[in-house]
Image (cartoon, rainbow, N blue to C red; front, side, top):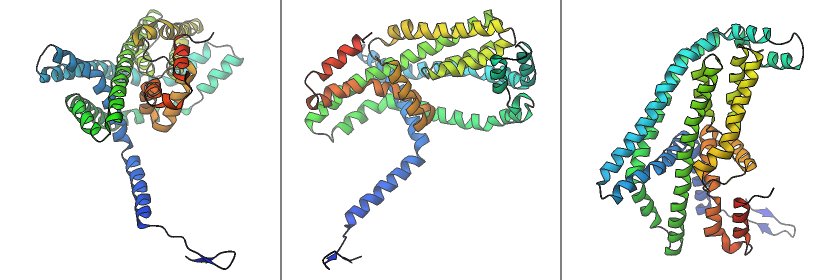
Length: 358
């Protein structure tokens, strides 16, 4: 609406229809992204899985085998891994999980009976076990039984993700090249080079994470079984899943393990803490460097901040996917940012990563 300025002149604010259309399109795109956030998360995980499986297709191609053999082998590997995971997960949840929920009141009383009548340890454990579920587990047990519908929905989502992963193995490279055609020649070469290196980072992360999670679950099961901690299988599966979340996963896994170990003895609980801490140290300083090589040289602070921030923004999927993205930053820095930085920035960053200061 026209208004009078300080000198009596009229001021007009004219918004072109093109600008209005752009604002409307941006709002519509934001709304669509919010509505599709679950699908986008599943697609991101499928992309990570597809990149991890694609070396199988390349291997069969180098041996001049038909492409369908590589796709078939990829699908078999994927189904084998997923099948093994659910073969361990489902019995652990349906049997031991239900038993744990039913025994929550007895667990609370037994844990408290093993502690001194007063003191910091008893107060801390009492606060942890003060939930109403430990006195009356019926509501949580009913909720546990109602999770069947949620589990079915989750299985459908997992199936969709696996199907997308296989199709990405089949058509992913062709779609990637098709999209590259939109870019100028110079940028096209940069994206191709960055894509190859980022794919290597993703492969190293996903394959390494599978190895470390399985190692963590096996280690935890053996240790808990030796210590005669109840529900060792369920705790081991939890430890393997939580191993996906660096640093944070350790605390999520060790607390229930120590609580169940307290039903044996306080000394057993301390041994469980030492057991988990020892594996955490071995994994960080021996297993991870061997498995990941130099692909994911990230400081502990970088990992913690990245996982927490991504988890707050995008949940578990974001926390899982953020590390290969962050680890790909040096590639972006070297290919795109180097001309805009000080002459020795990239070299200095590489030296710090390879030889961190004491």
